[in-house]
Length: 233
Length: 301
Image (tube, one colour):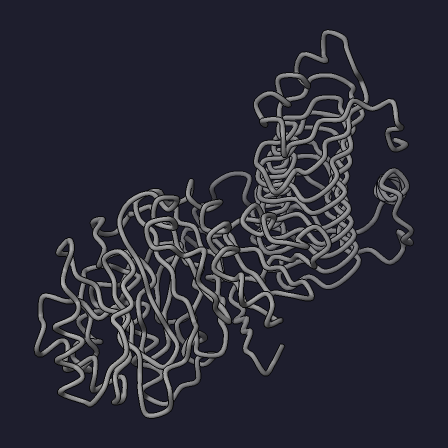
């Protein structure tokens, strides 16, 4: 995951349209440049969405909504912050954001790794289905809502309703949790979890001691409708 | 969906170009709100003892000289009219409340868009790009300004239904979102004697702040109590004589980004509206927390 060198194909978004950029990145699945540098992103939406090739991409600056959505195989580094829906429905590959990510980062992601060096806002990993997410800062409310698979690692604090209606995602939080969501409880570390967390921190390049984290997961009380819970609705 | 842009100058040289920069921001937000656009500029304070009105006439080519003359005879010498498209700014030698009331009583065909010492509100239907050119916004200097691009959801598209809504002297509000309890709240506020001119939900939010502040609340307190009393989703930006405030609903349904450089403080619905500012690449950027009041004012920056 080293940064792309001078050989990278440079696309300047102050001169090239998003549509043209994305078409070129899609075409790269059939050959052509494998290393790319995207300059002047200017907060534009849908940058590098829908890639289906093991490209190495650097984006120099802040990006808008749905950046790197649906990514397959590409490794993308955003040297700035990201808007709503970063790496939405990511399938595989790696997305690293140097700054913050807005709401719904890695939402519905099925695989791959998303790393946010700053904070992620509300709804981080909402309905995640296999993606691994490592946030060095804090996450906002309703993160890992209805999360089904994968792991969410938060090195800072988590907002309200963490893991609300969670299925089987593993959540690791180093700081405080404002409030756990429905059916999300603190759980013991088993050997598997320590290994998983250690591996994810290493993969994300985060210097943190796994022993400082607490683990949260599903109490599995909401899997099926229970008539005794009717009052809760 | 609507778009919001706010810009606050930290240096006098930036003030000179603030209209140009806010125009660029507004145009970036055009996709979020193609129905109408509006701005509040804080500029050219009226001399002490005088106040400033922004008036709107729906009549094309309305002759503003007679009303300026009448205001002079009623209150003593007035300045203006300074005409921008369908709007005119007139400086009157009395306080803003009296001047506004006089216009409402004597010229019901006009609409008072704003009243105060420094505020000027311009708003109109149509594409934000055309709005910027038609009103000559680029040439305006200002200490700070707010802009809004509207995609209507709760009420019809007219000039009167466009944002900003004036919430009192030198105060205005722009809104991205929609409110559910505005009908009942409107009736309550009218019973409290607050003037509400349209069936628009955002105007009710503006009127709510006017009422709370009339009852003695600070702007921060008024916004905080709005978290309980305004049912719906919103990002609000509120312009004051000295700066602006930002508040998002606690669920954070609507986006907001803030940024600060040595020359300016900016807020917008999306970062792309900030990216067009000089020095944006090196400015600090962050997302305001939901349910948290943020205020920038002259003496505090």
